[in-house]
Image (cartoon, rainbow, N blue to C red; front, side, top):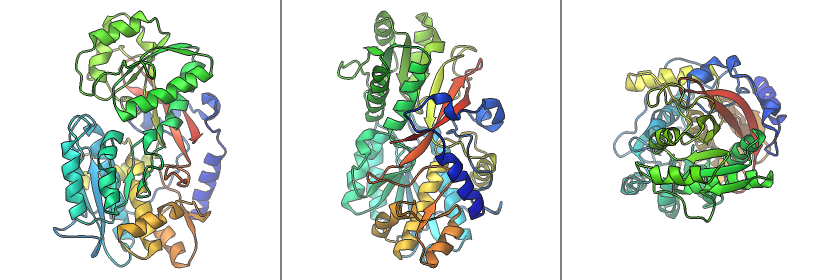
Length: 455
């Protein structure tokens, strides 16, 4: 992508409304974006660029050699969900990292060294021993950066391990508010829940619902997002009738039956119910539908706004809505992700959630290393915000273009397919997009509108 094209795109994005917002302000009809409708778990924005970072369909799968460290390579470790209830996020996140490393090496590597990736399993919050073991292995391998985790609870389990060893962690998917400013070695390319919570709460209030109930699991992600949605609804004159902050109605992660919770929330008489969970959603929805609740009045978030066409009877979720943070990258970028995954793993890719955020996390880290003149993780930490645009640099959209500017001594602002704004003082994106989805008769979620939110 040429720099002038990228600059025009970013200026266009910057003109959209912030999240004090009316949701219709930057919404586009889903029929104008057939790829977003066909890819149900994709992050959303109809404002994505039409040209993408890779200039070639030649992909490399640059797995780190045994014994590789930041001393001899730009080593990208990953702590991503290969198993567990967020495993559906693993393939697109891994593909985002792998494609970025391929692009970095095609452009000459980092500080004279080749980039490589070492992806390890994060598991999920139901068994934190998996992420603990992976984090310890990663530390021993002395990486330049760690991409992950997907789960906020998992990151909270490992973030101190990385920080204590001065290893930079960049999550492409964490949204828990508790992680904002948590550590100088922790960054993210996904917006915190205050952005998504404001969008979801505004959507609910805008639909005319004033009494809401929550079915939420006792997880940092779930409770933090619940608090943000509740605050937004209440600020619009509404109220919470079940599952509210401080009431203690949360259920444990991994629970499989929900008759008691469904009976309690429906008895409270809500106008709408917000379900904040992961795989538990597949058990909650049938019980809620069997109880006679109007499922078009249910709302979901990025943890469970997905394709349920194989899980529920047709029409079960028709009319229900959900939100997913992040930009819906163009079809060109999705094709590159599919191409990399086919080359690396022998199969395509049908889910693109947080792939762009994973790609940008990796590219930003490599640019930070170049700006710092070292592949050590401390150099990545010291320069990560700067290359994202925190120092008001010149815009560039590809690794190669950004490197050329850095070599000229310029400050830069990398603007990638995720569409995030510069990293702020709490190591969060200063702005990001949130997509609004609606479930069709086949229980697939389709993009209906997009908003840009700021913290």
